[in-house]
Image (cartoon, rainbow, N blue to C red; front, side, top):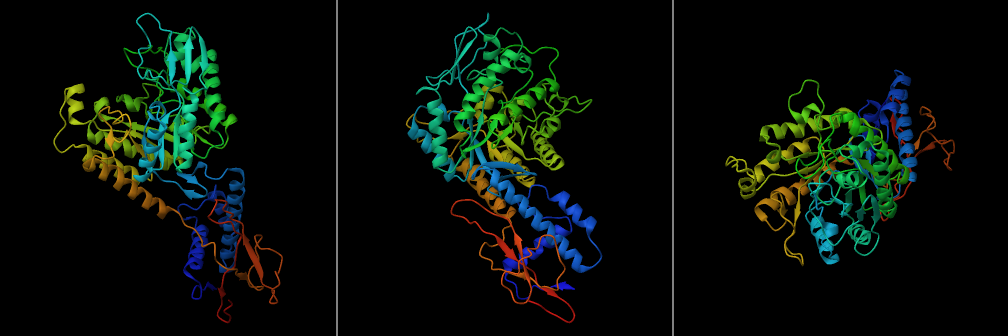
Length: 529
């Protein structure tokens, strides 16, 4: 017995192919099913030798998976991003994306500039912008003037004085962030929001620690009073935006480490390790999810590995990182890694392997990994700040293109550091030596526009969808039975019964349907349509 596809339209035949691939245990990439593996294994276990049973059990599996997808879609608000296997997803579709960092969006104090920045980022093909959801105004310092932080602006989200924190919800505070979120919603863009900083810029961890009377940078991860203060702040922020589809994810901290800036922040203690930081990730991840169960959570780390005997600090866990352990935490929906060979004194070859190693981690643990920050200094900044000259063949375009190529090979989304525009009312946005301005054609065209086009094209190829307009088909009465089949004859006089594939898609202006179909069985003596 064989499946006849001769009279089927292309979409129908594709559906048959999906069933056959499910049967063999190789579902097509991008099908929005939460856990196909267990069901496929059950199908293979129950399968008999006959072609009838092979096909009907595969059909059962596909129907069960579709029902699972329908159930999931009913509990997740439309437009919210989520993780499924190695993919980010939105409304049942893979969401592989190019993005950028614009930490400064809430601090430029110009709604027109914020709107232009978001629109220009979207025009470039980007889908997600990472920004700061924190800024501390601090009046409390310890001897030596610590923390010596920058980024002091008229806009701040929380003020500190002598151990007391006050969240600024007014016009110079979170109302400004409200506007950023609103404009992202209006332009169908998403925001990855970091909730504090490891470093001294814009406040961050050491402001909490100093104001609450502690001496080590990593006390931030351990001391209950500090953790309670952090929870108080992030609960205020998250409750404001937990119903917004513009939030891509919450990031617990930007680049959390055991240590901070050597001269700008507090020293680390001797006892800090990945056990210290990962315990904090676990606790705070659970706390965020208790407030907002629908948005993703990540820890925001640089991607440090922990390998016994490693001499390279980025692979030894020296500063509190253990990427595989962190990515495996159930409270973390995806992982992040950063890459700055200039600051880290690493070679281009080392950097290429860094990207590959994180792609392998994604494949190994079957959770998404986001290439969240990466940059290559301009020659002028490199000479000025590091007194170093890069080889002539190591230009920003050649180096970053290789990283992007490797990232895309592993289906990792990425966000370069950082977005630059020069049409703002304040002139050009900030330039830290890594900024890529959208009007810089020699760099922006290949690294931003062309790269986004390549990612968006690949994302489209990840999604397999059966046409919503497909008409009904029926399993002939003589065909093998299956638990997935409806008992209703639906008015048919030949006794055939319809099969309900309950994959409901609830995105506005797309489609909502019950996919009813059956398949054509062909024997040596009979062909039924």
